[in-house]
Length: 109
Length: 473
Image (cartoon, rainbow over all chains, first blue to last red; front, side, top):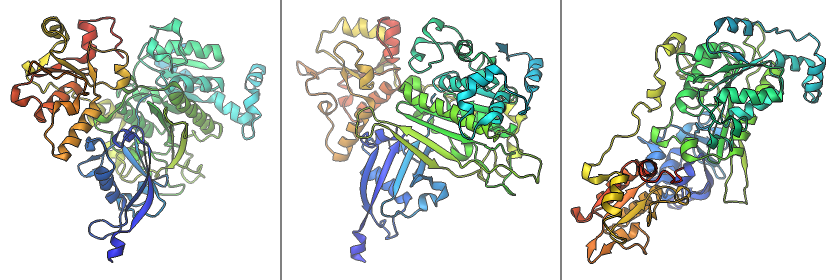
């Protein structure tokens, strides 16, 4: 079990629609994230969101990304280019090679 | 130009446009539209559907101008344009349906002038007003298909709700800075609350895809955050493309009586466009994102929606779109005390003229693009986001914050052993108040020994009170 604890999954994470300003102004990130959360359960998207806040976010305005423990209203999460509501939302278990995209909905015109 | 603002008799005449797709095309129509008619999949019938169709373009700005050009060029027979604004010079880099000579005119009449030059055949209907809960149903009911080319969330939810209620397909797009989005909604038009039965899954509405608006502090407008012309232009052109596709294939026609075969749902797809001004490795990106169909839980079109969302309710202010989008409060009330604030005029009289250089620091928290056009003499630029990042870094490291960590090292922060005061200025006077609070929270005021003061109203007020020639953006 102990070796599994140190395992990681390689995924890519993209930010768009202005969210990239919270993550060192970089839209594309190739990451190795822990395969398990602290309780030993397989890492899911909910875990990833927390992980991103703690390790990747450079701007302290976390409330522009997470509000009340959930993804902020106005942000869509797409798992391999599909709305996460077509998957299992934050319960979706990360798979190697996944692309997770966070976009802020736009209103200008 | 018809005026659609007041005359209801005209509404009747608009809806009596012949829907017949069997008549021959006139010689002018044949000539004018020949290059699109011969495209595989088009043909005479599709062209007549375009000619018979009535399209409403809400917003005559960065999306509406390019969209309207192609809608008019393709020969859509009746084109309504809704906008209450007038043309300004700062619109013209992206709102290409207007012109320098028409600055000051209403956007609606300016755009229709342009469209008439392009194609005199369509009937153009001017709605020189903003869309509101009071007039939305009257406007939308006169048309077959709606383009949302507006610029704020409250209006976007309103338009989508009324399109659901009136069973109209909606092509919605939005854009800011270097990103754009477009999605076709409620197409084929599907009655409110219909969830089961043949022909499903049903198409989503705006609320199905974007359940809640972002909080007001996270909403970016083009006026505040900027916008590149080609980015918003591409989205507007794509809206026209989707509209033409829908009408040519008769997907805009309301569903036939129960039991009759239905058109298959349009696969809900959000097209995302973004590019980076600084990276030539990936000059632009298109991504087609698969969205979920109509949701049972949707407020507007889901289960039980007929009880909560009605045309009469919308007219009577229910739901309250401004409140829903957090816009009721206006700018945040001042959080600082009186001695923590100074007007630009007082700053010039009491500080700049009395104290010499080196006796105070001006911290400008605007983005560097704004700062590059000028600031108060001697000001140092620390953008608001950077300031907050630095503050957070310091907090994490546990070090005692010093002014040197916030302002660049060359800035003199002491004079003859005394801490010089810091005056904070931003664009309109909101970020600067938060910055003053933050700096004090970090203890940089040394318990009151160093004054940290907000220049009230920002560079906008500076331009009004001190320097009318200041290039405020």
